[in-house]
Amino acid sequence: MPFVDANGVSLHYALAGAAGRSLVLMHELGGTLHSWDAVAPRLAARCRVLRYDQRGAGASEKVRRDFTNDTLVDDFEALAKHAGLDPPYHFVTVAAAATQALRFLEKRPDQVGALVLCNPAPGVDPARAAALDERAAFAMREGMRASLPTTLALSYPPHLGERAAYEVYLGRYLANDPVGFGLAFRCLARTNMLHMLPQIRCPTMVVAGRHDTVRPHAGTAELAKRIPGARFELIDDAGHFMPTQAPQALAALLEDFLPL
Amino acid sequence: MKIKANGITINYQIDGPDHAPCLVFSNSLATTLAMWDEQAATLKDKYRVLRYDQRGHGSTDAPAGRYSYDTLLADALGLLDALSIRKAHFAGLSMGGATALGLAERHPDRFDRIIVCDSPCQSTPQSSQQWEERIAVAQKQGIEALVEPTVSRWVPPEILAKNPPHVDKIRAMIRATPVNGFIGCAAALADHDYASAVAGVKLPVLFLVGEKDAPAPAMRKLNEKLPGSRYVEIPGAGHISNMDRPSEFTKAIRDFLGA
Image (cartoon, rainbow over all chains, first blue to last red; front, side, top):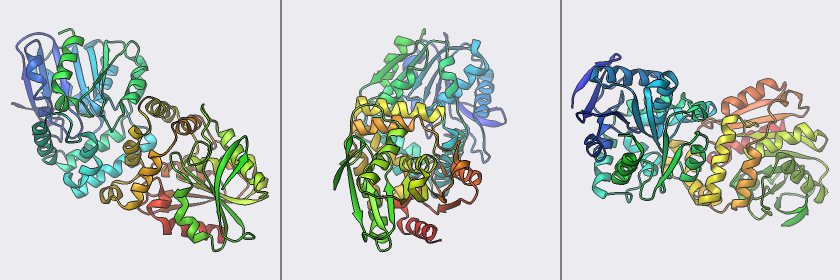
């Protein structure tokens, strides 16, 4: 898996699939491009699949300065250009990564083919920014293990999906740079793309997990109603992180929905 | 104890001497009057502490439908009338905090001092949408689905990581909340504003908030807008600041009422 120096940082990415439409898989906060390991190969048989570690995450550069949602969108654009991945892009996002796809859509509406938002966290009430900063500071100060009860214990109960997949996920999660993790939280605290929901004009599917204890599925269904014409799907065996918890069910939905 | 007021049966509890000044406590969404156990045990030495379960909570009636803040204010006044209490200090937290400020604005003749805790005292377009999402969750999935998301929003990570007993008490209160009551009160929270008129309040007000609670910045602004009011942050506390740091919280109230 190659690296590229793009938008001022080193980004670790994987591009698979020889031909076809451009699919972009964006991982969750605390995840890496490996969050998609059980989904990406199946899709790469039909299209070009780009996944990458967000700045501060996985094997991408461990930054030490605050960044914004716009920075992350710029990272994507620089990476896509380098990788030769052409628009229109079909974005599949997990949780907070929805904010990046929505910002890109706002910036370049003609370059988005479709959106799939898994358990989307499309923005944070500015009134809650300080509370999220608190979580960021806690992770930065105390490390990933101390953060587990308030993060992964909620988003990934071990009984969901394959136990082996959980063990691997937990290992990767604990290997996160706590500062990069905290900076991503701080970025989310200052991001609010909720205004985009009623303005989405491309085909959109919202996917919820029945066992999501971070964003209960009925709330996500309510959110999906604000997107004109959006399709809503509920995966029975998934929680908050469905690419790892229910990869086959998610891949089947993607194959059904995306014009690949 | 139960009493009829404003068309429903309200559950309440009184601790402390009959002739001491009355101090009312009004609970937050998805809790009960038991949230005030520590405050009642301490403050009953000098005050007649009256606490009640807000409409839809604890052992108070939980009629179906969307409630309004006008109704929540009328419940509080109805309770005072039913108990023949002419004047009282009134303290409330979160949903109860907005109840307290609403009473100060609309019915100043019935109160002495007002304590507004952990509430921005107004909804925003964004918070209204979030309440509608939570209402949908309560309707379709039940209260259980709201327990952990709510706890992780309310309790700061330092405290949650240690999981002290009071966090389990909070969980149990959320879990026991009637769906009707949650929906009714969430609808009231989705549409209220006592912040815009705060500058006109004529009573002494204490704004009391957990240092790590989301409404802290908004409450600093409320304090700035209201001449003569007081603002106190409880170090380390989150949204349910009176349970996170009971003695500091109680001291802030005692200082304010004794001032």
